[in-house]
Image (cartoon, rainbow, N blue to C red):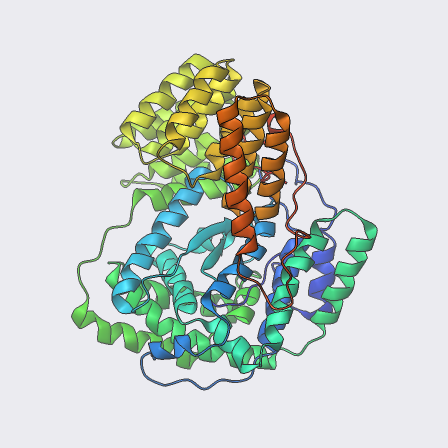
Length: 563
């Protein structure tokens, strides 16, 4: 995979036809029966802007041996600037419906990615870079690395992998792109012309989110113009950097204890499928990640030579299977998902995969067939030891029935048995709110926030309670903290100013809010500036919203991030 992306169209980049197909989704609604299936202009904007970046880059010939890690610093675009670009893009991506905000899925992909990052620190000298891994609900098989360490995986790619090592191979490859600073090195080779094209991505995404006809026309014009570019330079650029990422990615995969055949096996399968036209989703993948026989042979040689140093392979985790099952259950039509899991269960013989029973139970919950969902989940429980994904779903089923006392009980037991599975806390707090126990919910969130200050969803949940209690200073401050963590510094400043104006708290709380406002303003004034950017407050603004109406409901799966 690479620094390029083909989002929003299962056919990949196909000139104007691709762009016009993507444009059709601009005003579309959620598909009936699907929890979070929406493709839109954001997908097209990302695809075209990053393709534009790539098309501007020349054919760069790098060393034939292992990656020269010293080259990663040979770029005039600084690492803080890369991070600032990535944050700006992510601010918009998080607000799109394709962004998967489910805490269990986010937790899984983040844990897997961080495991690989830890392993990469033994393969490189880069111990300072921050990473963030996220999922997008998109039926194009792809993955991408944004500047600054933000790595996205499409839901369809996750579902296409057959082993966790294949998925780890994809992530390791993208991590290598970031560590080698391929975006910065390519931009530098073009004397920064590609940087301005990349900076236009956030503007294109913002325009795509607008419902106004003028914004839509502006986005259409930008996309149509970009789609006319030639892609030969893109392919030349990709092949050089792809080989470099392949080589470092294999090292990372090996050091993390995964099957080093996972990466080459996945790529070979993609190439075979494309050759025989098995799946129309693959051309988009291959256009952004060009595969050749020479490249696959080079990867295979690396794998063969690495076997002498290869340590024991870590067994595939149960979380991988449950994550795939949940993604499939939420991304498909609920009836179709139920049929898929029933067919999969029917094919099982001696070895029983209880993640299929879990997926069926979740599909039945979406259909509000609570009795059948409970029966299927009981089967999953009986196959093996206690599992957090199963217990979380058991609580969610009770919440779906509005059996709040039973749901609260299961959430509490889950928190005690699986303290690292934070979804239980989110579900418990939400259930307390729904059952009218607002004070207990606020107390629980506040206790967690004493030790965890970097989780925006905790501040979202706190704000929901303060709004119900009509505690305006506390509400706006919590919203501001959530905005600040998500990278929306202007929104954070606005919220703290509203908090101070509320004047519904004592002197000490107001003084604390004033001190925090000064910290926010200082951070904004001292932020990393991008070329041409001024130190003003003319961007990054988010509209106010009601937490009772827009805050995430963890029982119903991924939801729209607050806008």
